[in-house]
Image (tube, rainbow, N blue to C red; front, side, top):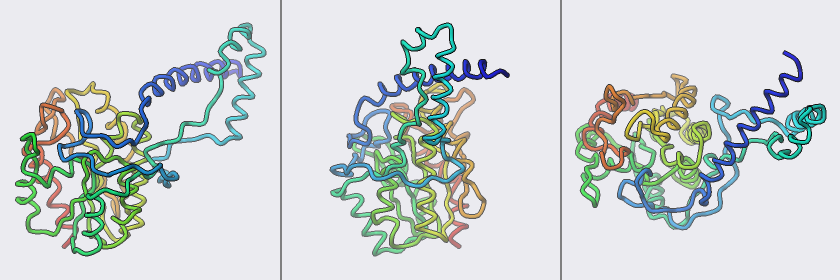
Length: 327
């Protein structure tokens, strides 16, 4: 393939990327990571988003190579832009291409908010979890957002059923700490682990499921980086624990739901973290779907949070494995 053809293909790719960046900027018109109450489409769960005043995002956390987004170096970007400049100068459409010069510039991929630890100092939930991690004994740690948080309640204030009765049925005979917080994100979990929740007691097993709250402004690949960063942090904090890395649960009314697709994209990437030694990727999503891709065991009001039937499916599938890890 000639250099000219390659450059033309590169121009087309950049134009498409420019259109994507514009659409993404509209999606991200609100400040990312801002504390907000629960709302439909966000895993708020009715227990409230209680991390308190937010701190500025911290520096990017390290990411496992298995899930890292390829990012060109500054030198590579400069070389590509030099090639593009030569192509423009030699093109019969030079004046037109110069008119839209900003669309013909290769940019380093944007900073990923999903890997920048972000938290608050006044969260009663976080302080409570730190107290548990420091002063209590447990063998299994649950970590996540409201989908995990709702294991703690029989019903939320709106009457939506939670998973407490199912939890007691399957986990009442073992020592479990549930560190799920409604509305949390990958960057929130990172911050919590780095600021006390991962610094004391060492569980034998961890069940992690996080990422659905990142879908509003991040791509599936960015979410996967955030989850990968958490897994690295867990491996550092709990070196001897086995980690059950759950696929992000399905959401939305059907297979075409855009947020479900983002979660599916992230799930395909984080599956690479399974090493069958310390990290065990566990995808139980097919158990939550009917033959048309509709949800089984989830609230019809938001197509996001499990009801008792969903928690029953979840617990009956994972409890035997988790319990075997703590024997």
